Length: 259
Image (cartoon, rainbow, N blue to C red; front, side):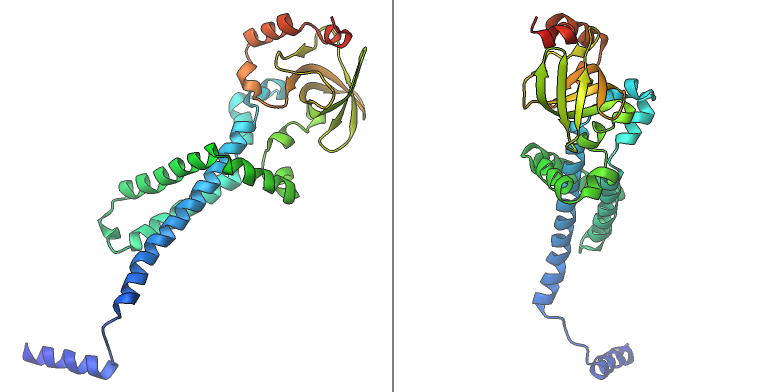
């Protein structure tokens, strides 16, 4: 035993081993928790952006896109943010395990802390508008984001070849409705007695609208249904909603003629 102690002391002297300063220990200890906090915040921001995207979409359009509800819903998911959140969760697990007391936590407890933290804080960020502001910034300043990486409200409603169009009303007169779409192109919107105009729609110059119908040629679009830009179509997607819209607003031509 004495020989072992002696050998250990000699080894410490030979290798110049010295106690680590307390400040280094504290930096390492709290640094791991700080990293964990940053990861959770990044995950929460990602969650708030993803939730904002999903809340803006019209989920009932599968009926007009001739797809099943499941397949259409899968096409709307923000996979970039889902993958990002997944990566951040993996990093959070790894960092939490590396903390001083990490070995005490089960995978279930780490999952509840990490996932729960991201969802709760992310939902708060969504409620205060952070997710919407960041999403608007990304759509405006990163063109590839809104056009290819993500199904946004704008990209969902700028598919004239698929029957979805949106824009700002510029001309309203007897038998004629004209809009500037989100890309600045002018469209003549064709209405008839079968066109459904949702009760919340304000047919006025400068108002933004969403149109479901069919493209006739380069500048003409026949409207089957018109919805307000704000709000989700899924809220009025039932048969009852359709009947209510017809009763409250009348046909497309009646609206155009002021009757």
